Length: 85
Image (tube, rainbow, N blue to C red):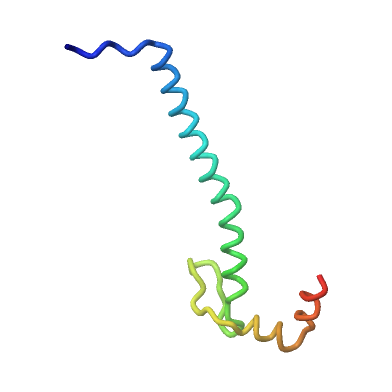
């Protein structure tokens, strides 16, 4: 016995659901890139070694290091500021 054709309103509901899923996925992807890329750049800039510069032709920093963070924790009161904030 052949399958009965799917009614038009069910096909339309399936298409609408697929469109909403696609639109939601695209929206989430754009938001991840929109928010995640600047955060990634900030993290990378915080790890750039002071002895090596990171400038235009380089896609990524040539050297990553903890030097800036060691300086922050050694010569500032960041621990106290973090504890009281």
